[in-house]
Image (cartoon, rainbow, N blue to C red; front, side, top):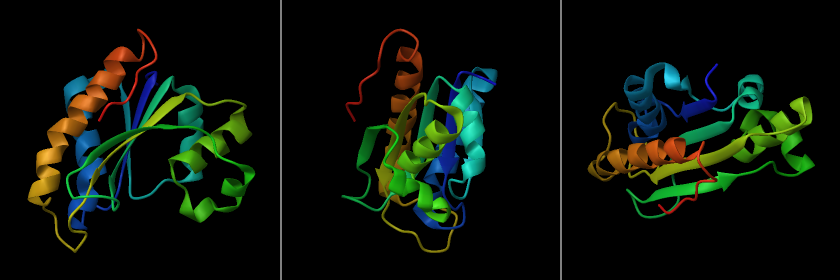
Length: 156
């Protein structure tokens, strides 16, 4: 397993929700064996073992918060014990909480997202999200490049 784990999640049949899987697939094409990529519809506890073995984890998703096309990068840390009860509704913080509880520690982790415009049935991204996709890819590449030099900072 690579020290970099990319988790792209969302439904590929719900418009902009496909952003996470699409960005993850593109990064896998670009970086090959330098990264481990997991593509999922949602986050599940089964990913915690892979998370525990990584040095850097990037959670990539489409957000519903903000103006469509807005790109965000946020540091993710383990949350409180309340996250442990919500196994069926895990977010990146919940995944980190489970990883810490099960394996004793967590790697450095970030969420990368862009705000979606449409989540209707369909396989095409909205123009705002299609325009944001290269920015997400660039931010991911920057975090990966900097991850082994010094602590990266998000300035999305």
